[in-house]
Length: 138
Image (cartoon, rainbow, N blue to C red; front, side, top):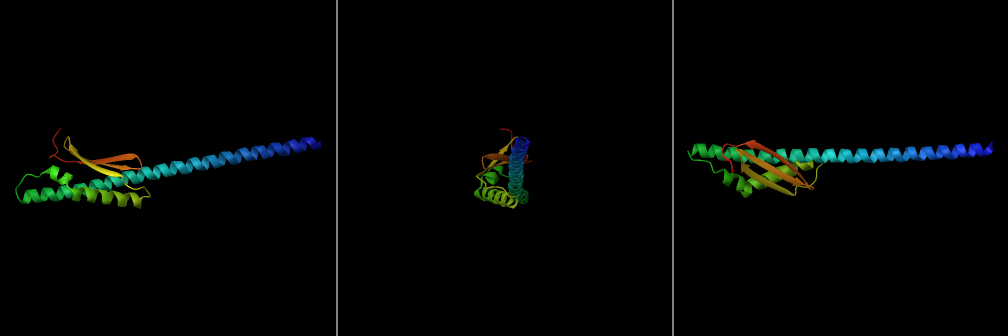
Protein backbone atom coordinates (compact mmCIF):
# COMPACT_ATOMS: atom_id res chain seq x y z
CA UNK A 1 0.00 0.00 0.00
CA UNK A 2 2.85 2.34 0.62
CA UNK A 3 3.88 2.20 -3.04
CA UNK A 4 0.41 3.26 -4.15
CA UNK A 5 0.50 6.32 -1.91
CA UNK A 6 3.90 7.33 -3.25
CA UNK A 7 2.68 7.00 -6.82
CA UNK A 8 -0.46 9.00 -6.02
CA UNK A 9 1.61 11.80 -4.50
CA UNK A 10 3.94 11.76 -7.50
CA UNK A 11 0.99 11.86 -9.90
CA UNK A 12 -0.64 14.71 -7.94
CA UNK A 13 2.61 16.70 -8.00
CA UNK A 14 2.91 16.08 -11.75
CA UNK A 15 -0.67 17.26 -12.37
CA UNK A 16 -0.10 20.37 -10.23
CA UNK A 17 3.10 21.16 -12.16
CA UNK A 18 1.29 20.84 -15.50
CA UNK A 19 -1.55 23.06 -14.25
CA UNK A 20 0.95 25.67 -13.06
CA UNK A 21 2.75 25.62 -16.42
CA UNK A 22 -0.56 26.04 -18.26
CA UNK A 23 -1.58 28.96 -16.03
CA UNK A 24 1.77 30.69 -16.50
CA UNK A 25 1.50 30.20 -20.27
CA UNK A 26 -2.00 31.65 -20.28
CA UNK A 27 -0.88 34.66 -18.24
CA UNK A 28 2.02 35.30 -20.63
CA UNK A 29 -0.27 35.02 -23.65
CA UNK A 30 -2.78 37.39 -22.04
CA UNK A 31 -0.02 39.90 -21.29
CA UNK A 32 1.16 39.72 -24.92
CA UNK A 33 -2.39 40.19 -26.20
CA UNK A 34 -2.93 43.22 -23.94
CA UNK A 35 0.40 44.74 -25.01
CA UNK A 36 -0.45 44.25 -28.68
CA UNK A 37 -3.88 45.83 -28.22
CA UNK A 38 -2.40 48.77 -26.28
CA UNK A 39 0.16 49.29 -29.05
CA UNK A 40 -2.56 49.17 -31.71
CA UNK A 41 -4.75 51.65 -29.82
CA UNK A 42 -1.79 53.98 -29.32
CA UNK A 43 -0.90 53.78 -33.02
CA UNK A 44 -4.45 54.55 -34.08
CA UNK A 45 -4.63 57.47 -31.64
CA UNK A 46 -1.31 58.77 -32.97
CA UNK A 47 -2.56 58.61 -36.57
CA UNK A 48 -5.75 60.46 -35.65
CA UNK A 49 -3.81 63.12 -33.72
CA UNK A 50 -1.40 63.63 -36.62
CA UNK A 51 -4.33 63.91 -39.01
CA UNK A 52 -5.96 66.51 -36.79
CA UNK A 53 -2.77 68.59 -36.86
CA UNK A 54 -2.64 68.38 -40.66
CA UNK A 55 -6.35 69.23 -40.93
CA UNK A 56 -5.77 72.29 -38.75
CA UNK A 57 -2.98 73.47 -41.09
CA UNK A 58 -5.20 72.74 -44.09
CA UNK A 59 -8.11 74.71 -42.62
CA UNK A 60 -5.86 77.67 -41.77
CA UNK A 61 -4.44 77.72 -45.31
CA UNK A 62 -7.93 77.46 -46.77
CA UNK A 63 -9.16 80.39 -44.65
CA UNK A 64 -6.16 82.45 -45.74
CA UNK A 65 -6.74 81.60 -49.41
CA UNK A 66 -10.40 82.57 -49.18
CA UNK A 67 -9.56 85.82 -47.38
CA UNK A 68 -6.98 86.73 -50.03
CA UNK A 69 -9.17 85.42 -52.88
CA UNK A 70 -6.51 83.00 -54.05
CA UNK A 71 -6.44 79.32 -54.88
CA UNK A 72 -5.00 77.27 -52.05
CA UNK A 73 -1.79 75.37 -52.79
CA UNK A 74 -2.40 72.05 -51.01
CA UNK A 75 1.05 70.80 -51.99
CA UNK A 76 2.62 73.68 -50.09
CA UNK A 77 0.52 72.91 -47.02
CA UNK A 78 1.21 69.19 -46.78
CA UNK A 79 4.78 69.58 -48.00
CA UNK A 80 5.77 72.16 -45.42
CA UNK A 81 8.13 71.27 -42.63
CA UNK A 82 5.87 73.05 -40.13
CA UNK A 83 2.90 70.84 -41.02
CA UNK A 84 5.01 67.69 -40.87
CA UNK A 85 6.56 68.74 -37.55
CA UNK A 86 3.12 69.48 -36.08
CA UNK A 87 1.83 66.09 -37.26
CA UNK A 88 4.86 64.28 -35.82
CA UNK A 89 4.58 66.11 -32.47
CA UNK A 90 0.85 65.37 -32.20
CA UNK A 91 1.43 61.71 -33.07
CA UNK A 92 4.25 61.36 -30.54
CA UNK A 93 2.18 62.97 -27.80
CA UNK A 94 -0.86 60.77 -28.48
CA UNK A 95 1.24 57.62 -28.68
CA UNK A 96 2.98 58.38 -25.39
CA UNK A 97 -0.31 59.26 -23.67
CA UNK A 98 -1.72 55.89 -24.73
CA UNK A 99 1.30 53.81 -23.72
CA UNK A 100 2.62 53.40 -27.25
CA UNK A 101 6.12 53.46 -28.63
CA UNK A 102 8.05 56.21 -30.39
CA UNK A 103 6.93 57.43 -33.80
CA UNK A 104 9.41 56.36 -36.47
CA UNK A 105 7.98 58.24 -39.44
CA UNK A 106 5.08 60.43 -40.55
CA UNK A 107 4.13 60.77 -44.22
CA UNK A 108 1.51 62.99 -45.80
CA UNK A 109 -0.07 62.20 -49.14
CA UNK A 110 -2.58 64.10 -51.25
CA UNK A 111 -4.52 62.16 -53.91
CA UNK A 112 -8.01 61.03 -54.86
CA UNK A 113 -9.54 64.08 -53.17
CA UNK A 114 -8.15 63.06 -49.77
CA UNK A 115 -5.22 63.91 -47.54
CA UNK A 116 -3.83 60.69 -46.07
CA UNK A 117 -1.55 60.64 -43.04
CA UNK A 118 0.48 57.50 -42.37
CA UNK A 119 2.56 56.99 -39.26
CA UNK A 120 5.06 54.24 -38.66
CA UNK A 121 5.60 53.05 -35.10
CA UNK A 122 7.54 49.92 -34.13
CA UNK A 123 7.25 48.50 -37.61
CA UNK A 124 3.47 48.93 -37.85
CA UNK A 125 1.78 51.57 -39.95
CA UNK A 126 -1.44 53.38 -39.10
CA UNK A 127 -3.43 55.60 -41.45
CA UNK A 128 -6.06 58.26 -41.17
CA UNK A 129 -7.20 61.00 -43.49
CA UNK A 130 -9.78 63.57 -44.42
CA UNK A 131 -11.48 64.72 -47.62
CA UNK A 132 -9.77 67.53 -49.49
CA UNK A 133 -11.20 68.64 -52.80
CA UNK A 134 -7.88 70.22 -53.73
CA UNK A 135 -6.26 66.77 -53.93
CA UNK A 136 -6.92 65.77 -57.50
CA UNK A 137 -6.71 62.21 -58.82
CA UNK A 138 -3.10 61.36 -59.60
